[in-house]
Length: 344
Image: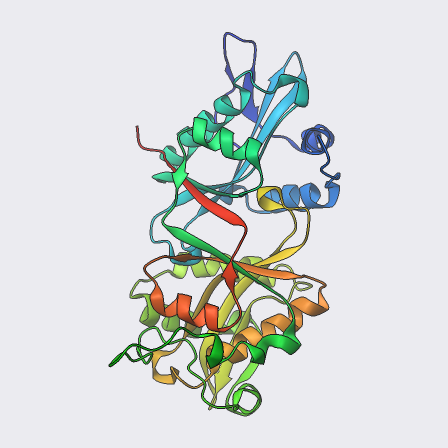
């Protein structure tokens, strides 16, 4: 939840921590225009914030005892390969009759303050390129396009093997796709089914997998991200009904993992999607189809949950991961990534 004292401006607007009793008003404000009411999403979001308040920053704008705006953000510390802590703005809303009065700007200023106090240097967010009002607000608030690509693909497990070598860009003379540190899954021929079934056992994440996952992640990224991974494990294991994080095992050892979660409303979405946070394959097993086997099982699990799309964010310089994801059927999403410095 949001932290810090209440701040009341000359306009009579008070910025304070969002509270559980604000839920009905938040739902009403969010449902302005043609957007459907998203009670289930906000209930889940509130429950997550109460379960782990250190990760969530949530503020309310109040005037005369009435909620007129809100902002929900989450602290990032390792998602999508990011090395530096940041805040991710997930939802911001202002009551229809109060828009244009600077309330959104006041909420954003409080988020920037919270980001700085938490050691974060920036605020990140996403928005559909069709959301003209939000694009205008972000531009006015000083956001710029981030150096990341937002990719997504339809969750259709039966179609997964169709995204094979034919979808890859032509290989330049002398170029090799084999880069041991980052080649997530170079499968050859039509052996994908055999690779997924015989060379790797893919199953849901378990608490006993932590050390091996941390080992692989350290070898792939070159960084010790145990704190981030522990948080991901806690979240994944705390919601056994959402089987989205997986490990691959071969020869009695863990050789790869994928961290993903379901997302039922962040960034103004009204349809269920899944977000792929991290994927890693032990460099010694690169080129053996482990990454494809992990994604194939992830697609099957998401399909059973009736999740229709899988989304991720990739640094534009991560060519190996981009090649792998494009080969697996991902394409640029209709969403843009934005960033705003929190440094004064």
